[in-house]
Image (cartoon, rainbow, N blue to C red; front, side):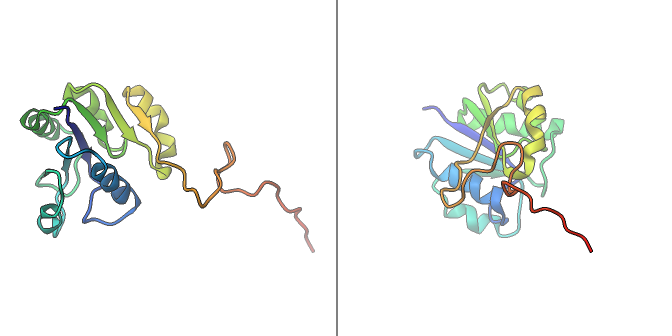
Length: 156
């Protein structure tokens, strides 16, 4: 059975937008097709026990692309039979992509990581953008969250 390894620092019970997105992504995989490799957090054991997929937590609070983290991620991938990897965010773990031996590799590009596009290309990561929010119109190309016209400046 194919299985995806999600590698991320951003996973509940820590709260935040990326954490919520990665958790929702993992929840939507069919049963048995995903495993999460993430950092440790307080109350993680209680949170993980209620999930329908395995979560392997490293002993550190922040995963960095070190040889030890690469070895651990490869070991998790081998133990669970993972044939592909997904990075919850390109930074800081994107450099692990070439050291896992799991093609194809993808990353989610949260809004705060707009400058990471070049890094993802350099690392040969495929970027998946979150679905746009239906309640908010898409931002204008190159100028997100700015009004269409600026009001003229008036001075004293």
